[in-house]
Length: 101
Image (cartoon, rainbow, N blue to C red; front, side, top):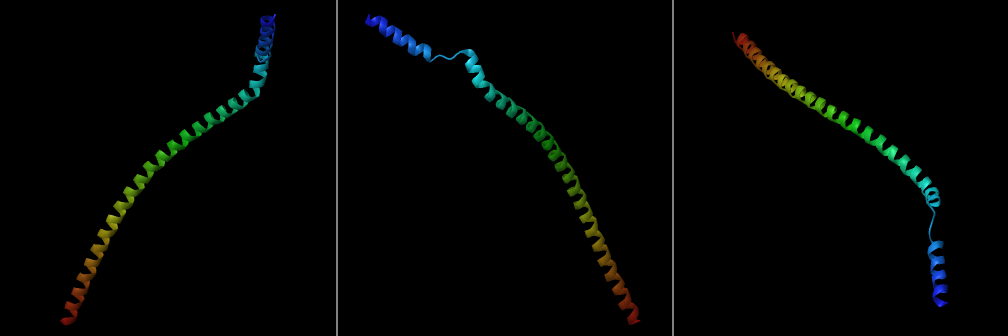
């Protein structure tokens, strides 16, 4: 009798702790919907991030081109300055030579 009673008590404990598939599905459904929504947002953000990375890469390339152009322009400006300073010195020398005559 004690064994039967113990079996009934244990069976009651185990059966009372079991959840049906429908119950579990109902409990998980709202969480699953939130997870699905978050997953969609993450996918969208990943696409946008990829597009931004492409734009940054393109801008870096354009920046290199602009830097290169600026360096060439600076070189030409320096050369023009040297030539103009040389021309000024020659003009001043010619003027002084002309005044001495």
